[in-house]
Length: 137
Image 1 (cartoon, rainbow, N blue to C red):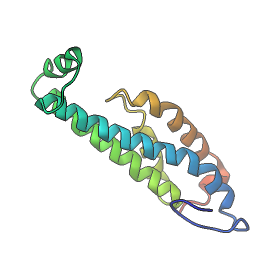
Image 2 (image 1 turned 90 degrees about the vertical axis):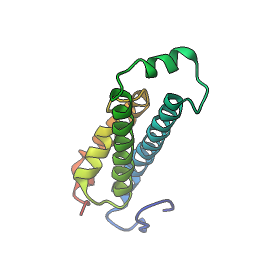
Image 3 (image 1 turned 60 degrees about the vertical axis):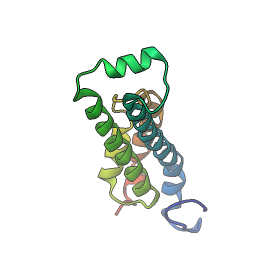
Image 4 (image 1 turned 180 degrees about the vertical axis):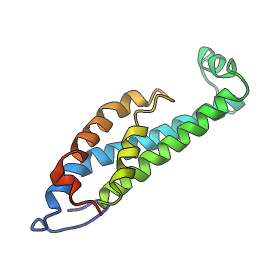
């Protein structure tokens, strides 16, 4: 098997768990990256470094002075948790952190949560399977 995480032969008992968990974990990692990029774009628009549609920039600038930066920080933390959770899923480590990473992909701080919702549900469904959970260290 190629890709990040464990490379085990098909005869390894962890093979079915990895085969089921890798696709949703990969998508959660992508959602985390997109969430962080969206937060960075929000910061650049707020500072005036990037041109943006007037209604978007006005909605960002219309927030209180602590609200927009707080949303950006929470977005970056949520994105990082999604990435770290997905990375641990690739190695079948820290089941709880993988669950937290999937849940943070649903956190409605940015519009990216709409993209993360189906993938997080998919990951949580796979993580709830006893044959997958038993292989986590």
